[in-house]
Every structure is written in C-alpha cells, then in structure tokens.
Image 1: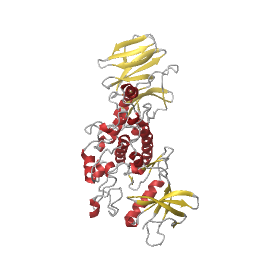
Image 2: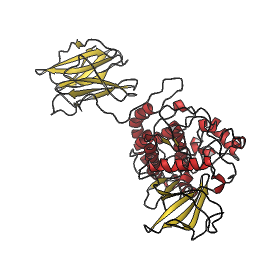
Image 3: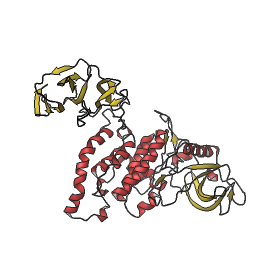
Image 4: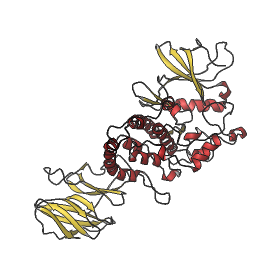
Length: 485
C-alpha cells in the first residue's frame, strides 16, 4: 500500500509520491531535522525479500561510495517504512538528494535537443559514468528516464538500482539471480526467464547492449552502449532501437542498426563516429571508455543549433559544415585510435591522459628560444608515441605503446630532439646537437644501435618528414633540404 502524505519515517515526513521504478517507489519528503527536501526511494513490499533487500542495500553502498556532481547523492537510510496504518513493512528506504527538473525522457518528448544541448548533457552523463567506472561500478540501466536535467543545466544520473561492482577482468558465469516479476508495469525489463528462477535480463530493452540482452557479462562497455543510444535519441528525437514489443526491440538491438539518416544534418561527423563506436554490437570492437566521449563532445564545433532552426539554404549550410570538415580532419585520427575498426584485429586500448614516466619532464626543444621544435611523434599505425624526455641531466628519446601507462627509454638516443618515424614505422629518426653541429640519426624501433645519416646542410634543423621512398625532407634556417635515408 503506497505511503500517504504525512507519513513519518523517523525524521522524514512524506510529502507526495514522485514515481515508481523497477527497484523502488520514490517519494518527496522533508527532513524535519535539517529542514530540507529529500527524495526517499522505498523498496516495494513485493520485493522486500532477503534477496531484494540485499540488492537494495547494495545500491546504498554503491551510491555512498560515489561523490560526483553529476550523480544524485545519498544522505542516509531508513530501515523500515510502513504506511500510516502501520500495516505491513513497505521495505527499507534510501534517502537521497532531491533533484528538481524534468527527466531527459521528458525533455526529448518535446523534440530533439540541439547539437550544443546534446553535447552539454552528454558530457555530464559521460563524466558521471566515468566516475562510477573508476570505482568499478557499472550502472547497467542508463536511459533518458534515469537522467534529470535541472533548470541551471546541471545533469544528474539517477537510479543505480541495477548497478554492479565489477572487479577488473571479471566474467559473469551466469545471469543475475531472478527477482519477483510482479512489477510488470515498471520500465525495468524483467524477462520471462525470471519466472523460472533461472535468471533475468537487467536493464531496459531499448538501451540494453547485445550482451545484456543475452544475459551475459555486463561490464562498463554496456554503459558505453547505452550512452550511445541515449546520445542518438537526444539528437534524433527517436530511439536507436525501436519495436512494437520487447521481443521486437531486443531483435533490433541484436541484429539491426540505427537509422543514421535520422540524425540532423548539423551533427558533426566526429559525433556520428562516436555514436557508431558506442553502438558496436561486438563488445570487443566497441569504444572501451567514456573518456573518448568526453573528448569528442568537449571539442568546439562552432555555433550550431537544431535542424529545425537552421535555414535550408546552401550558404547557411556551408557556413556550418565547413568548420566541422576542418575539425573532422583533426578528430579523425584521434577517433581512429579510440574506435577499433574490426573484431578480427587486435583491440587498441588507448591511455588518453599521457604521462612521461619514467622521464621527469617533456623536452620541447634543444634551444629554449625555439619552442616550435617537435617534441613527439606518433607511429604510422597510431599505436606508439615517441617523445623527448629529461631524467636528471639526461635527455633522450622514450617510446610508449598507447595501450601501456609508462614509456621506455631508448638507449643510444642521448641528446635527441625532434623525433620522427619512417613511413613503415620500422625506424625512428631524430636530431642531435653537439657543439652547435646538427646531425640526423636513425635507430630501429625493434632495438639496435643508432646510425648517423649523412647531412651537409648547415644551420639548426627544426623539422623533418620521412617519405615512403626513403627520402627525408627537413628544414633548417636557410631552407628545406632532402637527403636519402
């Protein structure tokens, strides 16, 4: 029986119901001790079994471990919530931050968000999930109805009721244990398998990853999938995967692709590529970390609005599209590192925040008066970074595979500067300067001694490129020269 206005749960007084979800009934309440409004989520009596209470208590523990501006905070727990007649426990209650404002689902019902609105909301959702993932917590039920947007634009991710603490490399051996299927009208999907107590599919069908739909492992890449579906829906106003019933929706998730033509023309190509990378059905080929999403969405694509507000004339469209084309050139390489292109290839894990350890600092040039000298280079296959680092008084080259956290010093590259790769990626060339004389050397990436490349040009060198035919083009103060490698 629902709680009525005036019900007291310790220091909390129920004001009004706010809604119900698969894992709880939510009420607005007043904290009479601290004089503030709160939200209390109460586990329905039908789910107040030992297993249901255990899952509910887990949510409290998970939320208590998170402290992020884009995640609704937990204030406390009420052990037992009873109705005003005192009959029958309604289950334990979770006292949470009351987040005013519509849900993202309510906002999308009014029409698609503009590109800039979607970017702002998307960045905050990604930041919230990334913070949870750093604590080993996977939401597993991200959808527009579980996101609120306050009037000041602040986004809050709600309802970690299906969240799971995932240890690194953990593999689910079986689907989650079944809960009671009685709440058939809740938006959280409970599969028919639950009725046999064999297992259940968690999440909401339209936002569930293929592996969730199969009842298999749900690691943080399930949240990445849901994020892609939510971002698509914000921009298009339609679900990425739709159907007349749950079976149709799940079939669409498993087999079909979203209608990319439904995205407005003013969505930048880099954002489309991001959504596609999030919605890779093969989990191994999917974007692995929402840092990639924040990276792309934080990029300034210029002033853009909704498709409806963009005049359908060529001059206006060119004014909007041209900056994206330029941005796409820059972002294309970055997204190429972040999105594995084929399940048949080795998956590249990219560390986006690059340190210089074990070097102590990055050296930008041989002479401090020439800060334009290139200090690092990316290998042609995009898998390695070489840079000039300083450790103590030793300056030399370091190489770091982008799926590793630390770099490795390269012996024989002391006093190096301005590194660059050969076209086939087998060699690294670099400048050295001793007593004012510039020398170009090369060293095998696989290891070995460095070799000097004859060079008769004079003046300080400050840039070079290694062509496929073996020719090295380089610049000095007198001009541009070429030599054979």
